Image 1 (cartoon, helix red, strand yellow):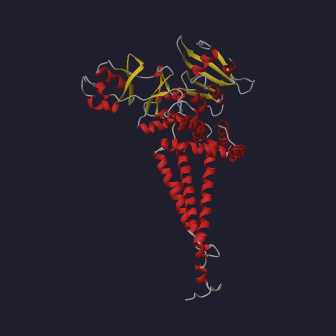
Image 2 (cartoon, rainbow, N blue to C red; image 1 turned 180 degrees about the horizontal axis):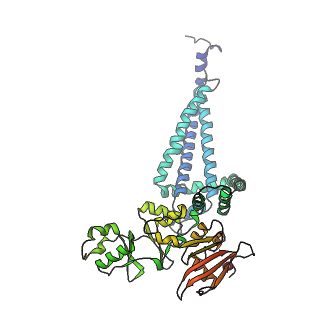
Image 3 (cartoon, rainbow, N blue to C red; image 1 turned 90 degrees about the vertical axis):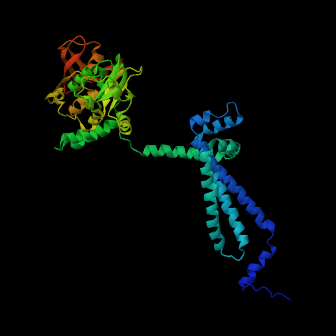
Length: 456
């Protein structure tokens, strides 16, 4: 029986007629091509996660003297070029998958003259394949098998890195140019400029000056170290672990502190912290032989630790006290959560701190009387801008007495003066061991004074 002739206007014969010449090779080769490209995309995605998530310890754990290890280290030594190579290769594989699959769908749907069916199939099927098998699954696998993926992929990545070197170099060069341009376009304000801006803002206002002090405290919070605000070693109240319970109880009662360090032989060997609340249940007893069992583990921090980091440590460790140690491991001071908070909110006084209010006395607009152990940071705060030049000396000394010792090179006698830039440090009281009372006076004019410690 004769088949009816194909009419070009009839869509059904048109769907059948072209498929007569559509052989196995017409769809088998593109299918294998898609599979190969998908494996390449998966390898690149897995390599990106494996290479850039390896820690230094994992890299050092690779076999020494191995050619593969050398290639891995060479690639990781140029991370920007490696990333550029992986991004370029991944895009090339994914674009190739889209192109080959679109041609395959066009052959499978020959009657789709507008190409919409092939486009929809390509968008849905290929997107699914790339996202699941080319991106997600390989990255999940690589995250758990970093070393295995790196060792397996290193040779293909080296080949791609060599082949794509011209393109990746241009990409890295362009990124560097953009980085420089972005840095130039961003105006960074220094801490000094922020402080000056706060002073200018509040200069004409009659608001509570404590608000300005708090803002300046926030600005400077990340620049201060534990050494700059700690209670010095000479002022630490601590208990000898060999003392009997009644003596310990008497000392803790007289000092009025809620937490007291306990040491063996010297403060360089603090063995624990005694909490007053732990001592209260035994307060009425005449003797407690095992009172040392009440001690809690001490927390040690280096002198250079920034107080913003220390504040987070206090929060994470649920503790309020830390012992500051120097580079040799000796105890140089003590710092509490209250000391850290005072750098923002100002002095926090309770019923036990009434005597502390006399440590800094403002005589007039340019003169202050203070204890020798007054911190330079506290003097700057209460000086309302008059003593701001002391900031440049904070790296050399923490207290007023320490600054005088650095400048004079000795313990000055009472009535001696030391010049510090535009400030006069007048010793009011001192003995052979320490400077007790100091008058700090601003000369209110600039004589070109600079930091004398920086010229030594």
